[in-house]
Length: 243
Length: 327
Ligand SMILES: Nc1ncnc2c1ncn2[C@@H]1O[C@H](COP(=O)(O)OP(=O)(O)O)[C@@H](O)[C@H]1O
Ligand SMILES: [Mg+2]
Image (tube, rainbow over all chains, first blue to last red; front, side, top):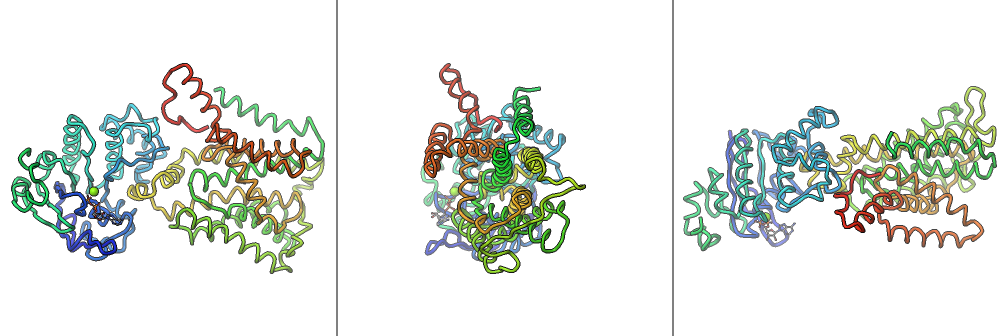
């Protein structure tokens, strides 16, 4: 049994079918890449998995063998599947360290000295400990992206869903981000990563799925998928040569 | 001792000495009411300010506490010292009832339901005349008396100090709340609901807890008020209490510990100073509030920060990064 089993997810917005019968599975510790043109349904897929803001019209998701059908969004996060959003998101009025503390499970005792120490240790892994007491709305784009990942880790997830973690970052920042994601995966956390940055996908993922118009267009080993003629035509075009 | 804690001590010392300096019964009355308002508004700040939930039933909690205290101590013979516990329990129960239908609603819908709840309570009070006194209000509530000491003696000195102690406890509790895991969750939901939920925060549970916690304050204040003026009246559900409380909150500054306290006291003093203007004083007060919010959007409590930023800017130094800790 895989850690995550996704079976026939379908979602429509009025007449627009944003996802149509998408299925895949993810093993513990695995990294799965997710690519596709803008509007192909990648973010919607994450929304369906996490039920933020709502779940799918049809299809089922099982995490550790347990169906998410009767779970609410916060219970899915507690069960171990945690996402980051495509745009940098933070609790702007809270300080950087409070962003972490509020994301920690209650058993980690966020209100105590030990909880705060754990939060600071997590921040230092992301080079954010120097700005722990700044309001999170005031820090830079790269730092906010890192903070969003750090708050996800504070939840101690089994699966991390990353929606375009490299978008808007400079070249050196992308390299740093790849390294960060590697380190997270090295802790045994499975990752699904949505990206347009092909080198990032090639560097990180063991499997790649390409979506197009809400359906799976291709799947397999990343190097094969990016050379798939259908993928090149629908999505990559000249990008494939750069990769 | 930091400068801030020194100011706080002086502030409460002045309030504590006020009855010694003046035993004028009118000043006493105005100050008791102002202190009670400060408690009520501090509680509203929890749901409306820290929580960002437009709960317009807050003053209804105050009224419900007043009625519950009055009815249980007068009609049902509960001892008067149980007034405050009764008020708190009644207000918290009311807050949970009104919270249920708005658990997952947002913005204008929350206003609609919560305001409607107050009007529903008002209709109940008007209709159940034999229980509540209907239109005329519920009168002759037994005053507070503990070990033979009447809180009414010495120009209601007892009520003054009760309200003052209540306010000090309020400030202590809200200060704890603001930097507790509970307070962080409340603020996180206000800042970004989807993001908060995605980090495992249980929206419904936290919102229920927010309402219940915020209702403690109008619960206590409503009970003290009822025992002090010895009456609970239907107009406590009306617009005028609500408008005054909202003005105090905005004037003082939302989502800060001291905003509601400063807002309530300054507002009370302003209205008294301008009594000679008659009804015109409301207009002047409104203009003053707008003017203050124009220059200090965070209200009176934001003035120290605002001035610091201005001073820094005029010295061409980078102003203090971030909001800094809220005062
Ligand atoms: N809440 C929504 N209401 C209506 N349409 C939506 C909504 N969310 C997404 N869509 C549409 O669904 C399609 C897929 O969007 P999305 O999943 O965000 O694409 P992407 O692959 O770029 O992440 C797009 O056509 C988008 O406009
Ligand atoms: Mg997207």
